[in-house]
Amino acid sequence: MTNKQRIVTYSASAAVGIAVTVAGMLGYADGAIAGCGGVLLAISALKLFKGYRYETDPAYAKRIDTSNADERLAFLATKAAESTFQLSVILLAVLSLALRPLGANDTANLLGCIMAGQVALYWLSYLFVSKKY
Amino acid sequence: MNNRIAELRSANGLTQQALADELEVSRQTVISLEKGKYNPSIMLAHRIAARFGLTIEQVFIFEEGE
Image (cartoon, rainbow over all chains, first blue to last red; front, side, top):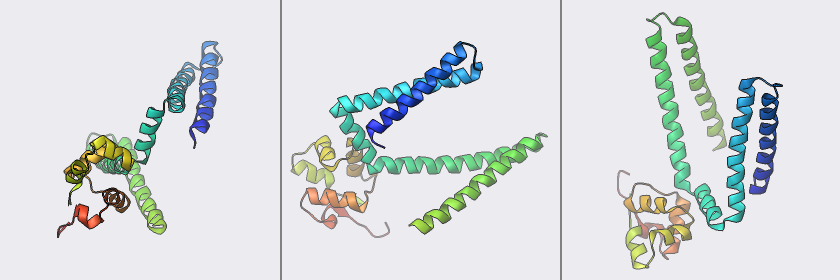
């Protein structure tokens, strides 16, 4: 996606955010939905500011381009995702086992199923990636 | 894997930022490379070696067991 396409996309999401927020203020939407609209508007405004700065500030644009192309940053992101996955599976397994003696069997079962789902997704991803590379 | 990036950069009168700009990576990446904390891909290793007019083997020191 080019920066101009990003600006168009985030302008549209900002417009949706404004519409939802105004609808909430006028009583046409639930407070929680209006809150989501506010969050959407805030994120879109931040992204639009970044997009505008990318267009008008060449030094900033170069810094963004460099960080997007920097292979070490991609490596770091992959390592962080790998650690997050391992930790989440271990945490879910521990919680699933720890909650059972406390009588929270439903929650323990749910956490166990989520853990099993994550592991199954990992194997599916592995199969897909091994065919691709 | 050890390398001669810091030595070659100094010999060529380049700052870490200048080398980073030429290689189109961040200065932090140059620092990590120089410290040997990050091993580059074959493409980046090639760009680094080419920048100094050397081969990959002349810049990066491979050791047994790595």
